[in-house]
Amino acid sequence: MSHSAPFQLFLDKLGSHSALTEEESEAILGFPGYPAQVQSNRDFVRLGERVDHTTLVVAGLIGRFGQNSEGLRQITALHIPGDMADLHSVVAPDARSALQALTVSTVLKVPHDALREVASRYPAVAEAFWRQSVLDAAVLAEWVVNVGRRNARTRMAHFLCEMAVRSGPGGTRSQFSFGLPATQQHLADILALTAVHTNRTLKALREERLLRMESRIAHVLDWDGLAEAGEFDGSYLQGGVPMVSRAHAPPLRLIAG
Amino acid sequence: MSHSAPFQLFLDKLGSHSALTEEESEAILGFPGYPAQVQSNRDFVRLGERVDHTTLVVAGLIGRFGQNSEGLRQITALHIPGDMADLHSVVAPDARSALQALTVSTVLKVPHDALREVASRYPAVAEAFWRQSVLDAAVLAEWVVNVGRRNARTRMAHFLCEMAVRSGPGGTRSQFSFGLPATQQHLADILALTAVHTNRTLKALREERLLRMESRIAHVLDWDGLAEAGEFDGSYLQGGVPMVSRAHAPPLRLIAG
DNA sequence: CGCAGGTTTGAGAGGAGTCAAGGGTTGTGG
DNA sequence: CCACAACCCTTGACTCCTCTCAAACCTGCG
Image (cartoon, rainbow over all chains, first blue to last red; front, side, top):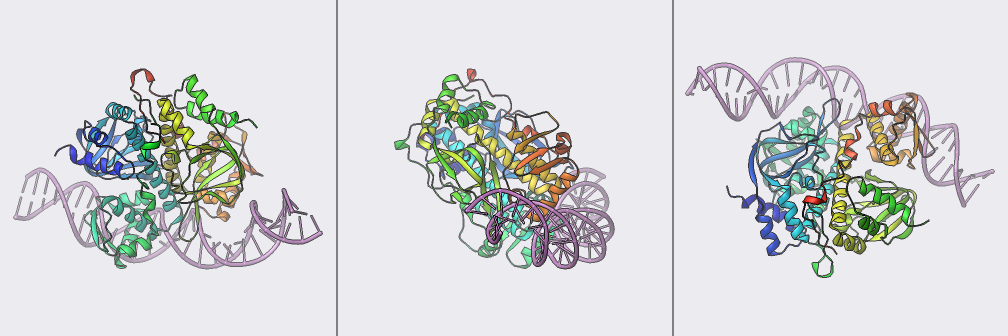
């Protein structure tokens, strides 16, 4: 597969919140990327490790993992194709949590040097990176609310809505499907439930005709119903207006590695 | 009070993870700041509002609030004096969550324009801002783990350890105190508990001689015991080595407003 | 001095966890 | 192309941590 497809997805994501010129877009599409297969359930970035590249997801599903002292795992972020799983590592190369694939995945390793070089040359790109970090944090904040203040059914529905929106072309349709190659144990680690209760919760959603999970594909049967069940308002996923025209603003600049 | 004290705290925080020159430090200490008193339990930044300044905490305690549809509140970040409560707003001015003081607080409003101007002039400052955003997100990730995978006692102890480390000069002492002007209801909103269970949990910690809360001051009675009870490892709070010498790296640059 | 807000405690309910067992699916190797 | 193993899903029965509801009791401040 050509490099350009995953970088195009990444560029689209940046473009949804930041205005980039043709030249800047070209620079992003031109990033070097070293392909790698990552096995599932095995850290490919370990806690505390210092990395010198970011990980662009090409296919599969990548999670950030934390855990408590008893080894109970908690996933703190999920990344789908087109996501840079650890953009933050450009400015904080010492990994604060482990990265692991939930299913066999392919990624592109993009050297920090290349990212910093382009960010240095194009201030708008550097700002887009920072803004992307901020939006990732907004998702995290929503996860705190989800895990903290919603019961299992609402929590599951909310999460599935989030992934549906992030995965898809934002369909307004009532029925559609999207890939979610995670086991029920993974869903449990995302939602802070047990695998058993995850199973019962999915069953309830299925019996309500809201959603059905089948062999790693989520079939939304009733989008409005699911969104209501999940108290879902997707505005936190959006970057707002593509941002402050560059016309009346001095360029921000970052020192780069 | 002079401006410089809170900006000095903010600068110290940046300095703990990013290397800044004398000149850059001066620029930060020279930020304009417009003082304001904020009342408790009243949003001073509302959800969806567009802001044109960040909020530097001078005194008191500021929280970011989310809530579920039933109005159950969840605090997703706490900011103490010296913290920039919404540094992220520089690149994402549309507030994704409300900001509220937990107790009467004083803040300085720092215009985005000034921040962007300095960040633009000094790439290292822009990078320090981005890195600070990333570290704030690391705290958030830890909160997801805390709320998701730890029981009430451990969760409370972990949170208190975090605040102790963030508040203090990182004492290695066994006994010390720090200000935490939050009610038990606030603690409940932070830890995703009810106020009643928060009370019982604090009682348990008190009876274990680990910690005592007295009129908005937390008295740590046994730091090692508290850290053990909270499964606390503070490394996620640190910025790592003050970072990649500027010697061998091209400057990152951000477009600025 | 009285009220509003905060803290404390008790009793009972319930959502999610735990333990256990059986059934299904997938992939690989003989 | 079958057979087995590993992994995943499903369900039942019971437990328990935290919530809910309720009532006092502080305590700081107007």
